[in-house]
Image (cartoon, rainbow, N blue to C red; front, side, top):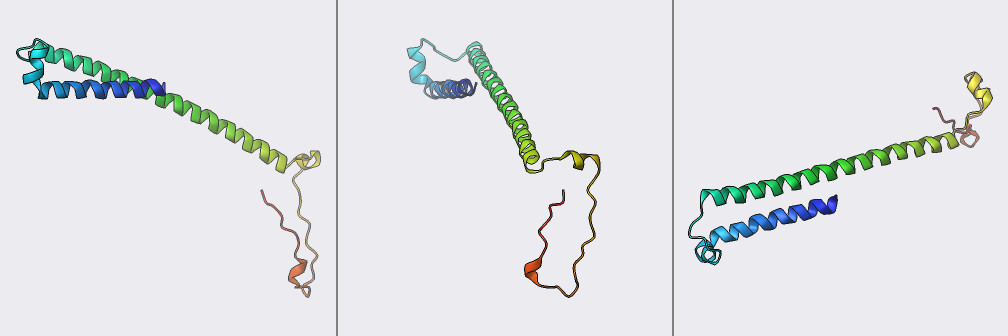
Length: 126
């Protein structure tokens, strides 16, 4: 879809670029195509074809964006699922911890013992 969008954008640019050059150099190029003057009917035809090309490019842009958006949402959900699995591996639940919440035991540290090397291990609070 992205390639179609790029192709339609390029086709729209070439289309309007070619007609810009044609109208600027109409005095010399008009005779090559057998046109003596520019009529309103030919202008309407040129603008309608340009509008159709523009709408096709815009529609393909919208389709490419929605496709990318859905892909991003899918990848985000997969990432969240993987994060949940990693969390479950890091924090396994044992059957005894599911029945009752863990209770904290009072710490029995002596006030005179202030040596920094005897710090208790860090506990993760979740």
